[in-house]
Image 1 (cartoon, one colour):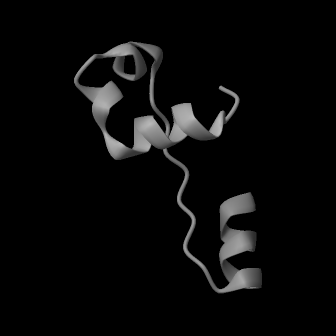
Image 2 (image 1 turned 90 degrees about the horizontal axis):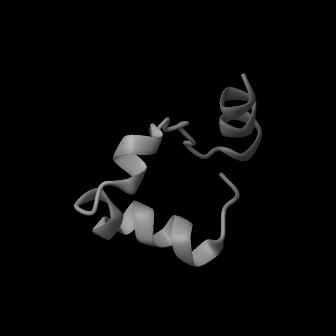
Length: 45
């Protein structure tokens, strides 16, 4: 898969993270560092 190819080519560790809509909209989850970074960087969902 794509993450594996990137890991090998660039000597990094990338892991896909799947988050369903209900969890993404949960107020508790929205204050996590990951959710804040997604909101700040404008990653398309």
